[in-house]
Length: 454
Image 1 (cartoon, rainbow, N blue to C red):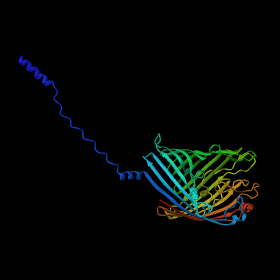
Image 2 (cartoon, helix red, strand yellow):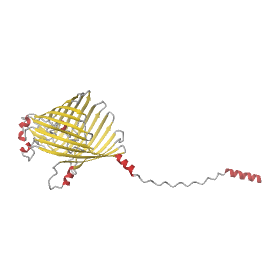
Image 3 (cartoon, rainbow, N blue to C red):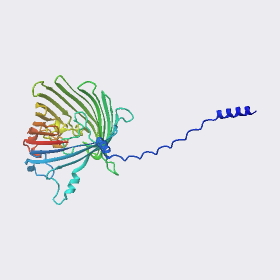
Image 4 (cartoon, rainbow, N blue to C red):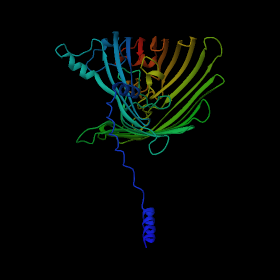
């Protein structure tokens, strides 16, 4: 009996779990280290890029203009004028991760000695001249790789800038408020944009600019582009050829562009039409540009090029068809001569370009232009598309004149650039025969520009 009891007791003890060793208490959490300032500053420095530009340009012009602005004595147009322009831009780029970029570009522009009346406080003029030139946010790879969206105030530039240009030559330049959607692939890209040029609260006088542009770049050193630009100018300032009331302008400008180079040769070919309404008139206009050049593979790399541009004018101001092409927001100063007295509008320009480059950082240029009107009963327009003179009878003919631009470009190191030259415009028969509206002499224009970039 004792033996059986002892055996049962031993079996019971064998089935019990051994006692667990006592648990070691967990160590207290380490004290949180304070944020180190130096690595944080380095991170921010990698995300923020600061740059900018200082530009000074002196200009001289004689005579001042060929038209006679209201309230200005005709003789005053024979006087010469000089001015000094200043522009400062500061570029601030903030990169958040790899997909989001924020860009802010304040700009100050002014003409020395032109700060308003003496009684006006200086800070008032400063506020007038200081503005935000660009300020936008861009999101890359939105929903799909290669798709990006940019929203804010931005510059727009397409093709050779004949129709849409930020106009960097201007002391102010151009920028648009809106949104732009871009899709980028290795062999092609496409953009669609919508911008507001003028927004009037409580009125229907808004002005909008929008468009689509696509380019195929799959062939080396060649571009094949198609586009369409549209405008809705609701300001009741446009009158038709009939005596109807002032109304709006709504138009579309589709076009194609080819550009390339091969074996020393280079070319561009661009054509566009314009359709829509101006007041009560139908818009039926067109324009084209052709260039061809050759660069010699010898010392100084001389290049000779020719260009012909043709923008339609209106040959019948009473038929209800508006046939004068409008250059929209193009870079007229670069293409139609430095004197800024001719336009890609009711005009034909045959140009010869000569260039030599003694060094990679230095080049000399001679540009020769012959200007004629497309329709002699339409107006002679300046580079911005504003009319200078009109002979509704057509008796003055179509010969505006010839222009020679002699200029140089010199890059002094990486951050300093100079550009200067002299222009002489030789007035043609149209200018002589319409001198009752202003001066009829030749014009001289000269400039020297210095740019410091950082």
